Image (tube, rainbow, N blue to C red):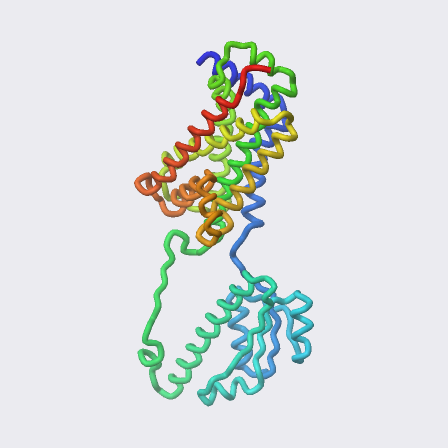
Length: 376
C-alpha cells in the first residue's frame, strides 16, 4: 500500500502543478455538458411556416391561428399566389406552407369536407415527420371543434356518435417530454468516459517522454501497484466531476433525480474504474503523447457516442452493430443513469448492467497491468 500511495501522490503532483490538466479535468466536463445540453435538442418547435390563405375569411384565419398558437409552427410569411410556393420551399427559409383554398368556409358551413393543403420540406426528414404529425393533430382537433360548434348551433349534442373513443394519455417519467431529461444522463456517460480515458492515456506515456520511466522500471514497484497508483488520483477526480455535472443537470436544467445515490455511486465508480483501465492500456501501447491522445479520443468518443444508444436506438442498428454494442461500456452505464435519474430504478432491475461494468473494469485493470513490461 505504501508503494501505491507513493505512485498516487506522484501522479497528484503531476496533475495539480499543470493548470492545463486542471482545466481539462474539472472545467471541460462542465463546459461540454452545458454546450451539448443546449445544442443537442430533439424538441422541434417554432418550425418556420408560410401561409397562403386563398379563402380570406374568419374561419380560415381561425384555422391558421390554431397552427400559430400551438407553438410548433412559427408563421413568418404570408403568400399571395401559388407561384411563390416553389420558390419558398426551394429557398429553404420556410419548412412548411399551409394553403387554405378558396371556398373553405362555405364548405364547412354546409357540413362538407374542406381540404387544407400542408406542404412540407422533406430535405430534413426528422423535422418533416414531426411537422406532419403536428399538422394532422391540429387539423383533427380543430375539425372536432368545428363539428361540435355546428351541432350546438342546431341545438344538438355532438358526443358519443361523433367520437366513440376518448383517448386519455399519460406520459410517465418525463411528463413534459423534454429532450434534455433524456439527453443529459447520456451526456454524463459520454463526457466522463472521454475525460477518463484521455487523461489516463497520458499517464504512462508521459513517463516515457519525460524520461522518468527508467526510475519506475528500476524501482521495486510491481506492475499492478503502478496501475492502481496511477488510477487512484484520476478516479477521485472523476467522481468529483460526476457529482459536479449531475448537480448542474439537476439544478440548471431541471432534470429529475428519482433513484438511489448509492446505486449511482457504485455504478459510476465501476464505469470510471474501467474507463481509466482502458486509458492505461492505451498509454502502455503508445510511444508518444500525440499517439496516445489520438487513440484515446477515437476509442472513447466515437464508440460511446455512436454505439451506446445515446443518439441512435440500438434496436434500429444492423445486427452486427447491435452485437458490437455489448463491448461498449457506455451502453450499460447509460441505461443505469437513465433508470436512476428518470425512473428511480433499483439494483433488482439494474444488476445485469452493474455486473457488466464489474467485468469490464476488472478486465481492463488486469490487462493494463499485464501489458506493462518493467523493462526497456
